[in-house]
Length: 288
Image (tube, rainbow, N blue to C red; front, top):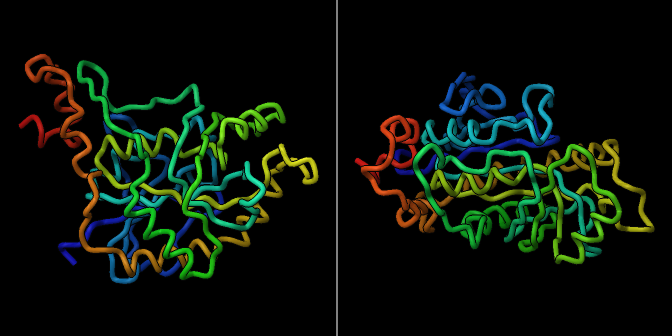
């Protein structure tokens, strides 16, 4: 057990608890970036220590733009998490990605405008590599877990994250399709990029709830439509999480854990002491 990684589940729309969690405890955490979206729940699932965080807060009270992404990722890092499974609802921008299916994307486009996108500011600059923004190793394990749980999953596709909270116009939706995007949501950016800056593996289980608004033979997306599909897929998500946790490989073999090794560009003696303290959790091993 002590050699195994600690995994975090970030629950999005429709997933507000983890079934079968043993020894559950609720933890209040503060970070240099404020408080996380909600108290964090720790416990044991399938013999593996896990951490659970509700992205949109208790009662789904935070819009996508209001989610404290930096505080969330920092808090999870402080608890020893090194792998994150994100759960999200998404719209399909492709005919072959059908509502009710799961998409585990391999690419991400950030089309948000109002969010803090990096931990690195106040005198410390880092240029982290995100050519492949999701952990390939963890994504494959998640894909296998969804299949084992009986879900129809796709292990590919480009995800575009929009600001929200409104849904797209038809012009926007058709533009995203022309750009080659496969699915659309409101929460994966900057979450995935912050996880990479924190040297944590990250993947996302996207539950397709609708065809956005581009599909002329389908009704435009509504909240009721999203909730209906999510309710049907909740059991699938729970089973997939249990399967993944049960079969999680003990050690990481990817490069996510060394993402900052060649990313820090600021001369060490030029970094303000206050910034060093603020970001010690993330960069201490490179600066000490």
